[in-house]
Structure formats: C-alpha cells, structure tokens
Length: 371
Ligand code: IPM
Ligand code: MN
Image 1 (tube, rainbow, N blue to C red):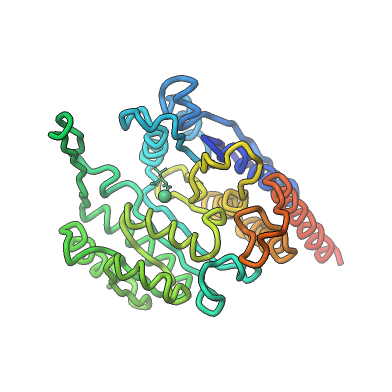
Image 2 (cartoon, rainbow, N blue to C red):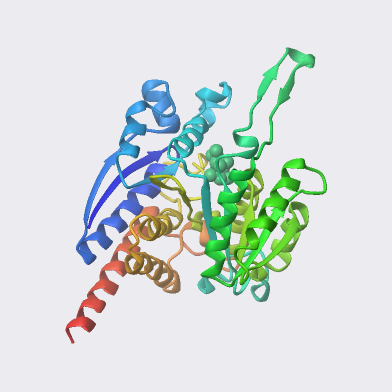
C-alpha cells in the first residue's frame, strides 16, 4: 500500500517527536511492505514566522491531497500578545475545520510497567483503559459571536457555546460505534444542570442511544466526572463529551496514567484524518532532546488503524511501545516516584528503541510464517 502523508511538525517539541514518529512509521512500512510518501509543511508559530499565517494555503492543499495528516504540536509563547487569528493555535483550529475532523478520539490506557509514574495508587489506576470522544468542531472553540471589546476597565469579552442537533448526533454515533467494539459503556459528560447546550446534548444523546440497545448509556455532570476520573479511572469505557470539556478531561486522563507525553489522538470524521498527540508544544523543554516521543508514536498507530485500516501494523507499533516500557526505558517524564535518581534517555534514544522493537517483532512474525 502507498501511505500518502502530510507531516506538520509545528512548534516546540513538535519537530522532535514527529521526527521519531516518522522513523517508526518508516520502519513499519518497510517491515510490512508499504511505501511511505510524505511531505512536510508549516503550521502554527513556525508558519507565522515564515509567512505570517498560521495555516498557509499550500499547507491546506497538501493536507487535502493526502490520505492522512500527522501533526506534532502548535503553540509558542512568543505569540501570546497577538490577536487570535495571528496565534499558532488558530492554525490548528483551522486545519481541524478544513479537514472536517469533528471526532477527536483520545484513548488513555494504563501501562502496567508505569505503575510507579501515576500519582494514583497502583490498585486504583490498574486496568484503566478509556476512550475519550471529544467533539472537535463546535462549542466555545468555534461558536459565534465572539469578541473582545472596549478599553481598560470597560473591556468585555464574549464567547459563545453553541451546538446543533446534527453536530451532537454525529459525534454521539461515533461514541456508540466505538463502545460496541469495547466494553459497551458510554458516559456522556455535560453540565445539563446549568447549560442549555448540555440539555440539548443530553436529549440528543439519549435519543441516539436507542439505536444501540446493547450499549449502556449514563450521564454525568462534568465536575462530578472529573472527580470520578481520579477516584475510579478503571471504571470508564467511552466518555462522550463536547469540545472544551474533552480538552480538559483528556489532560487529566494523561495525568492519571502517568504522563501527558503518552497520549495519542485521532481527529476524524472528514475526508482526511488528522493525527495529533494530546500534549502541547511544551516550550519549557523544546530543543533539549528530552521530550517523550511515545505520544506521537502511538498517534502513528492510530493513523495506521483509522486512515489505512492496517490493524496488524497498528498493533505492531503499540506492542513495540509496550515492550520498550517493559524493558525499563524511560524519558524524563516517565521516571517514577522511586526512580528520580535514574538517568532518563533522550527523545531519539526512545524512538530508536521503538524502531528496533518494530523490526524485531516483524522479523519474528516472518520467521513464524515461514516455519
Ligand atoms: C489540544 C490542545 C488544543 C485544543 C490547543 C492547542 C488549541 O490543547 O489539542 O488539546 O485546545 O484543542
Ligand atoms: Mn488540550
């Protein structure tokens, strides 16, 4: 198969982690007999610096003409003082919209080798395997009107949370379809005791649930869901929620399993899938070669699964990550409570170990086939 890809390294640690993710993808392609065709384009702060636009037209063109897009991270403190449309984040929000990526899948899976990394006790976090389904093109992020007006003490700002029935219905279906292939539970998270948007959300989700009788639906207010997440993370299967709540709860899920640096995501629903690790550009550690590339590498697994339907290849990447963690390789963010004196490995070393593990497991499969 030809794997036609646009890579958007972006800002901060984005280029470092996507570099390793692409090496892993190349190793998988070689091992399974696929051809990787990739072009790299600018987004975010990198694009603002080069052409004063966080999402240049040729980046959009390239993305729309490929089968999938792999993104690193966007965001850079140097642009904090600028209006919204000249900030790096505007590039990310626009590419999500251009690609029609309304469904953001954010799995948070606990790795037994990382028991010591979670701030929670092992018996609490053990068995955690949830899928956050975050609506990605609506809510406060895109609602109109939005503005900041006035001067000084008379300034006021407006954002609008807005959801329509079709927007809720399509994301709800994604959650129920996923739940059918998992533990058949959907928890819909909202703030229906306060927000009209949430009341409509609850109404539509409840109606859609009737088409999936084997899936058990429950509703939870977001404040209470945040508490339950740390109390009983292993109880969660699919969490269905709107854009902003999903943004917040997914970082929390990263904290629970030990590091945000482990979380992958797929933004799908449109013609071209966008694959982005959940962590941001992490300017504090950018350029030091210490960032954890595993979130980006696991994002490659999601890309193989969702855009190319290459399940064995996706599983190969995931097994490779599990095996390097089992062997004890750790980037700085993954040093457990009792290991702070250990020397962590670098971004490229971690990526290299995953590449090795991919090659080994592919060689083993070949041997088994020919035996
Ligand atoms: C994320 C990020 C983005 C978001 C930012 C960078 C716009 O936090 O992907 O979670 O809020 O969606
Ligand atoms: Mn976020």
